Image 1 (spheres, rainbow, N blue to C red):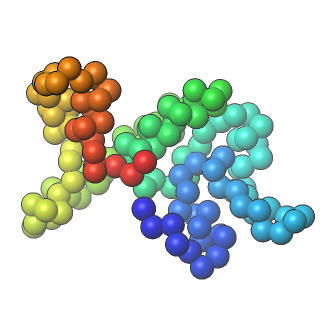
Image 2 (image 1 turned 30 degrees about the vertical axis):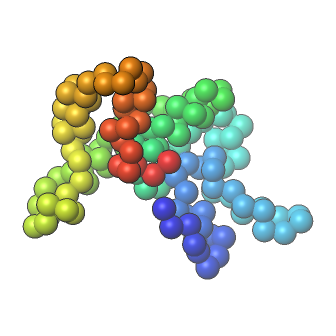
Length: 134
C-alpha cells in the first residue's frame, strides 16, 4: 500500500475507517474525519475507503475484538466492492491482471489440504498470502 501523500488530508483520504482517519496537525489541532468523533464515541466502524475488501474484513475483526461494532451495511459495502472488482477484472485482456473472485477463493479454501498439520487459520493465511494488504 502506498501511504505517501503531500498533505494530511490526502493521507487521511486513503484510510479505510472513519475511526482511523485522524492526524495531529499541531500541538492544539487535529484533523479528523467528519464522523470520527461520533463513531469513536459510539465505538462504531464505518467504511469510508476500500483498499482491499479482505484486509478490511480482517481489520474489522481486530476492532470488534477491542469492543467496536460494525453494522451489516458496512460489511456489505466490502462484498459489493469485491464483486465489482472481480467483474471488472474478468473483462481485462491479460490473465495477470485478473483478481481472484469470491467463488475462486471459496474453491481454494475447500480444496486446501491439511499438509504439515497446519491449523485452518494457517492454511487460510497461506492461501491469502500476497492477495491482500494487511
